[in-house]
Length: 109
Image (tube, rainbow, N blue to C red; front, side, top):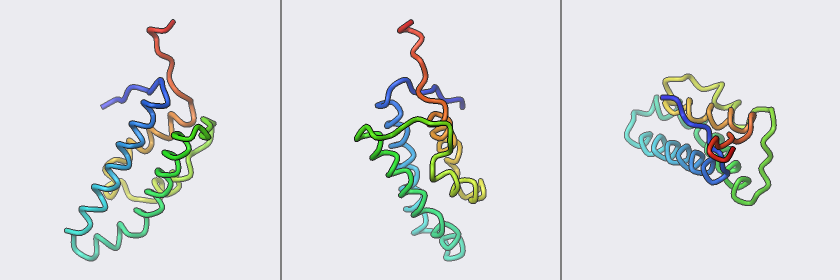
C-alpha cells in the first residue's frame, strides 16, 4: 500500500504515533513469545522506541528540522531483519518524509 505524503506537521505526527503504536504492539507480543524470539527483539526495541519518541517530541515542540539525512533510528531499522520488523515500511516512510520534507497540498495551488 502506497502512503500519501503528509502535508502538515500534524499529519506527520499522526504517522509517528502510528509507528509508536506498532512498536508497543510488538513489545506486547514479546510477552507471549518464546525466550529465543524475545531475545531477538530485546536488543532493538528500546533504541527504536526511544528514537521514534524523540522524533515525536521534536515535532510537537517545533524543533524538528526536515533535512536530507537519515533519522537516528534508521540505523536500528537497517540492522534488524525484515521479518522481525513488520512495520519497517512505515519507519522507512517516516525517514523519507524527513529527508524530503512535507508534501505540497495540490488543492492549495
